[in-house]
Length: 501
Image (tube, rainbow, N blue to C red; front, side, top):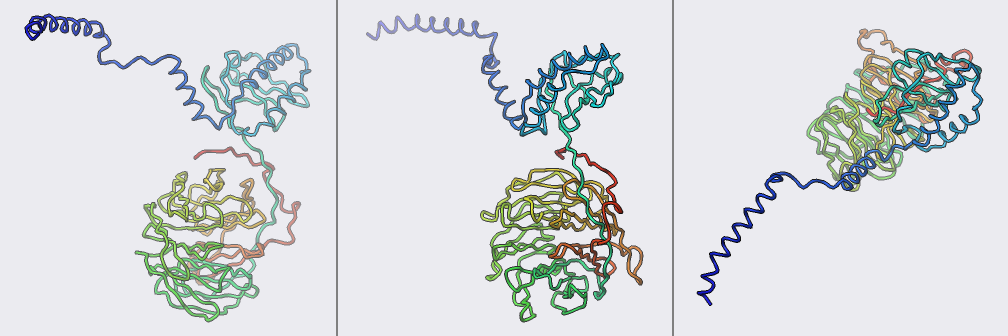
């Protein structure tokens, strides 16, 4: 048996070598190349990617086809110098367009005929304008589309054939009229910059913290000094009055957070853990939880009664200037000088989302008292965000200064205070700036001491308190004699689009 194998082995070996050589010659042309992708698989992969990336965009091919047909009819009628007779059909298209839940963006593949327009066609003006186009727009091969707000055909920017064009529809919002604000009272008493201010939930008094290392209590109605607390050894950066307990919390650049009992008028607790100055405080509205942040770039979550540190929220790379808390998610929001806003899950102590739209330090934030939104302020823009994901809604532009504080009341008035002494009042929904005030330093101060460090509305929403660099506290109120006729809105309509930056 072994002798037979020995005789067969050379034959088997030679046959195997021949098979290897023939296989190598057969596949040598494809050596080092991947397996060609099947056409249907490639098509499916591209469609899946497009659907995933543009899932929030509505396809409007049917609208494009119907518009294309209407445009052809209108062009022929214009050549005959006749008024279009298909207004009902256009109105029907507009109604379908308005019913779309996501009319912010419209996605369509535009046919070649859609890009053609007669250069000799001029704008036809009637009582209801249907087409607006001129020679320059025709030369640019501009597109024409229905504007549902104006019931007219307006020009869209040019797009290349075969590409996907996303059109952002601008909202047109009429500003709400608000009475202008005027200076009501100037209160003096501190010997240093007034860095922070807080109003009693009962609207009886307000509290201020200053660089003179004191905390002062003032009567809200008369402006008289009621009480002074001492205990910090450096500039006080934030004070907050609890609505659930008779406690006042304060933080300072001496790395400490203190709890004061307002019934005994003394300090009862302190919270140690920060490695540098503490710049911001926030109280949870329903839990016995305090959040603090400062120069060590972390937010520390404290149990008020046990004085224990619950979480250390790490992630920022620079000083944390502002922290706000609410009952619903996200329960903690922090803004930092690293230009980032972070939304935190208080249960797990982890970051839910990081918002990087700002290009400058985020020094102030505020929740809207009625809406599920919040506002952040930096020297580049004021931005409005939607909770809980932190979806960007809009910019409020125009306050070109280093904004130190923002406040929002229930009447949709947004106030922003800046380092150069400017105080701007905005209509919240439209972003219309209806008043600008430049504060004046009190006598005895130099002109440069007109900065505003903090501002807040009282519980009645009718008075605004500001803490300033000239060591004074200013109180503003609405002008009762103002009417829409005496103080009209300058711009009837303000336009803005959802800008994702």
